[in-house]
Length: 270
Image (cartoon, rainbow, N blue to C red; front, side, top):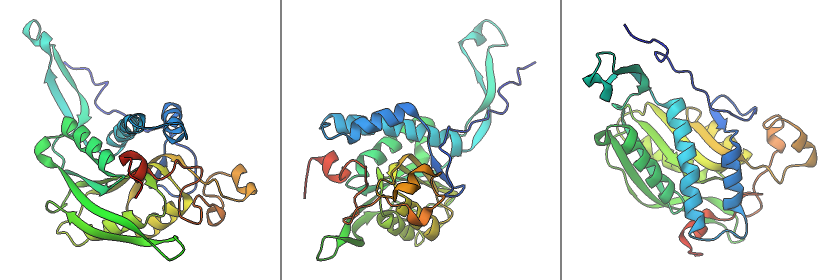
């Protein structure tokens, strides 16, 4: 005899309606939006900045694991097994035998990737979890406008065959760094089971670039910023007038955004 109530657990995170495609997920989480607004506020400084980044990535990674990671059936004896044979929980849980690789794109992605790595080690078999690293920076023209990204160093610890490959990077602004990193993994032996980008904030420009260049990538974000769009756009469902939506200023910073997170999180403004 067993209770079948937990055989299949339906889970779908609350999401904002949009028209960017089925691989884009903008969470509708009031608590996360509250803490993200605090993080982006002008009067927020260290150590509160990194504490809030950690809290927000905990929310984001939890939603991603629930929604995207495979599950399996478990039969786990509880402490009550000593007094009754019915002391066994049976139900669907996250499958721990899954390979996962989280990618640190320095600087802003260093803390989010470490948080993701530590979280995954608690849920999955730690022997199947890895963290890779890229040293990357924006490239700019003579007017300070971002024209791309460049890799100055990397440490990829092996193949990504059948793994869930995660890119935790706070600000999805232009998409240049993320697309460059994903391109690098195409040179690594093996094919990932799934590619997931995890951001605090994304722009319509970022979504356009990533969904075009890497259509199989799944994108999760806590907030969509399109603050420089024409006024008539603000009364429409996001993505309805995608070509008119704008979230980046002339120097490719997000508006309303929260400033340069690489600088803020490291208290280094060079």
